[in-house]
Image (cartoon, rainbow, N blue to C red; front, top):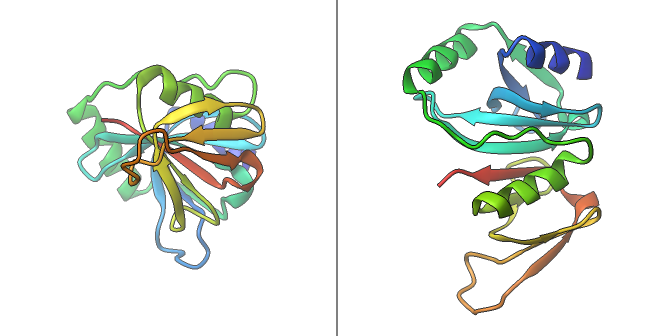
Length: 164
């Protein structure tokens, strides 16, 4: 799968990534923003072509990749018409999960974190701290000041940085 994603990244193609075998008709679609041999970062597109979120997931989760289809072409065309800007994400040389956490801190974007595919969403909040093995966030659904969740990176399957 890495080689297919690398080719799509180099050619700036819209891809649809399927990661949940329980719901094989659902996918995340967009442009690959960054890539390493373990992880992929995707600029996720809405049906109107706007970039809604930046996500990171493990390549090992991907069981199907679609590209060059009607759906991908429609979103590519819509994105070119929409032209909504977003801060650039290069990913760096290390973990993309760590990089997206630092990106969220820098640009003040909230993250949502999923376990076992993107349908089982865990915490959603603003990033407080990122280390090699942990990410700390405030829970936006908890109004108590100073609340925090400390989440082990090894249990995270999917992170999305929501553009405000």
